[in-house]
Length: 160
Image: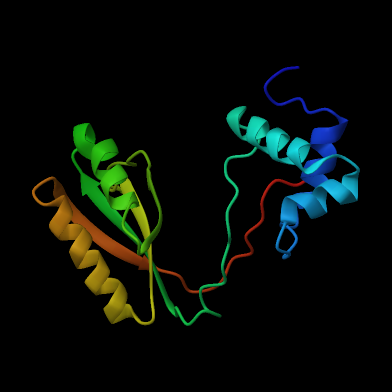
């Protein structure tokens, strides 16, 4: 089996979870019952697909607006390339950063190479959180800005 081939059980698990895990106390048990395998098989297979790169992650995808977070800002940072991984790992541990990743620069138009998503109840809160990140990145950051969301995009995972 190559890295992205899946068998009939993996496919059934993906189909059963592609719209999200059931909102029940034991979601893996519910998936297992639906496809006719033991819960341990579902858990093991999901872990194996994650290791193989078929599934990147399993996590909650909250609607930030419904939770009261009306300002959503992608903070973008121009940091030293040789420190970007280390700095990104540090920022990614902050409880107010939902995801942080490195991207290539697109010079001369786009100088930023580190991205961190920050949510706040308003823009003032997002800006205060960005200021905390800026303090952490000093003196390795040359510039930064905040790109605010203007609409909600539909988030979906793996689909078959």
